[in-house]
Length: 182
Image (cartoon, rainbow, N blue to C red; front, side, top):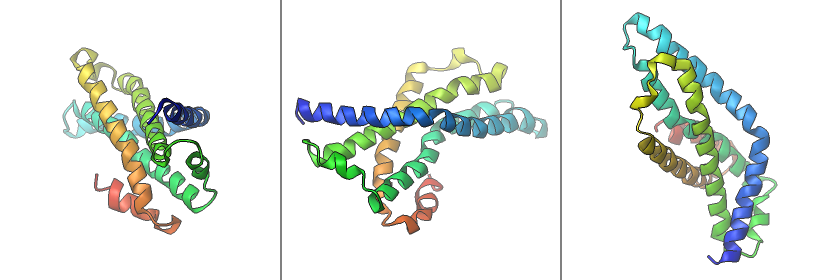
């Protein structure tokens, strides 16, 4: 890919991120509700029923791993609806760059979104688990690497999921066939 194609691809990602910026607060609130309920129950209620005091921290790790997974459904729906309806992706395919670069730009966009959402919940997890979560015990280099790798995986996975779903009527299959088993 030459510099011109790379610049176009980068601009497509930046455009999608500007659109995402408008919905970030709503997505963060939705994820926060899920995290607050999960961590409150597993960190403060379940230990009274015999579960380990560290179960809330364990759940925070699971939530960090699953944020992108739950966003895949929404992203796949958006892609399938676009492919079946307005086909706004056709605009990107007409730009002077390889057609695969348009798909890569979508994948990069989704990976960045999943990364942003995952990173944004870490402070909330610390606030909720307060003294249970010792920040000094975290290997930040490994955590960052894992979050980056999972974001890239989810960014690519959503493209694959959208190609497997043939039409809007099959969207229920995304959850039962792909997301739930993971």
